Amino acid sequence: MTNLRQKISSLTKSKDARTVASNFVWLSLLQVASYIFPLITMPYLAHVIGVEGFGKIAFAMAIMVWIQTIADWGFNLTATRDVAQNRDNPEKVSEIFSNVLWARCLLMFVSLAVLLLLITVIPAFREDWDVILVSFLIIPGHILFPDWFFQAVEKMKYLSILNIITKLVFTIAVFIFIKESEDYIIQPLLTSIGYLISGIIALYIIVYKWSMNIHRPEIGAIWTTIKGSSNVFINHLLPNLYNSFSTILLGIFGGGGAVGILDGGNKFVSIGNQIIHTIERAFYPFIARRLDKHHVYLMINLSIASIIALCLFLAAPLLVKTFLTPEFSDSVWILRIRAISMIFYAISNAYGKNYILIKHQDKLLRQISVRCSIVGFVIAWPMVYYLGYIGASLTVTISISLIAIYSYIEAHKLMANKQ
Image (cartoon, rainbow, N blue to C red; front, side):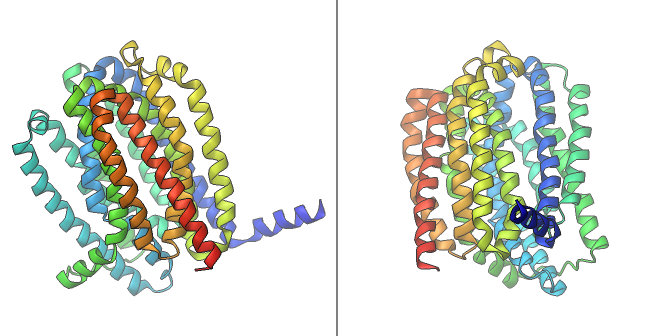
């Protein structure tokens, strides 16, 4: 008992422990807001815009996942790692921040050009061009709001406060402005405006409060920054081959109604994954400095993920009945299938991003993503075509499971070799 008290006492006195705890608390508040506010609006939106409106928004957001991944280019991990490891060098931090900002802007404009081309040549894109372009406004707001920077300097308070205020305001706006089924396009518009306002305020805080110097864009530096994060970008992009791509395929083969049912179940899983992601983000800068504490993060992460997955699996019928309308009844199957994937998602994060990447084994992590994502991409076509939204859910769960198992094996090889 005495030894236990001593360990607890030493933890509370540890600066690192207090920092991780503070980051976790603030990120937890953010994530609570992230899933409470959607739960508040979900029954209202399900009733007003219906499964078809849900599907159109989900289809557009599946496309935005690709564009946001391209605009991020893996910087949310590599830049976070680099800033965390150079926090005592303000000039170096300014250089990293500036190069990442300009690189993301360049990638955004390239993505916009490709998106306009796709809208022109693909009928399914052309049919919903308005909601797709409105949803695209999320991307510049996302770039202006460098959440990765707040994570790197372990100042999650600013990130959380800004996001919570914005989410509160625009949750209220949903009830004010969305009154009928044709108003579904207002939902992504409100989200985009929220991102833009938060981004402008965040940039102001970084530049003026912390005296961050934004350097003039230099093509050579931008290219070097993009090239340096390419392996992580590939690691982030390829999962879209089975994840958001399954949603896009479902929209093409099954229409907005099928996508709406898929999205209805996925929303609850997204809330659970956000909690797991919160733990990962709170620990990532700390683990980047103290990899010897990886086992602590692993235990916490897997325990919480298992509890959440079990709760969602058992409560699936009640959740769908409470928050959605009868036309979403099949979303119960989606929720149960995807609940299983949450455990594997936690494993892949623990051994992939929070071990293999921190060990600077970027190519290994890319290799894992390439192989597993190609498998997911191949099975997505027959699974979605023949099984519809059930097939889309199975595709994502199978693919995440493969990544988790592969990451676990490779991480333990590194541990054994002490690399």
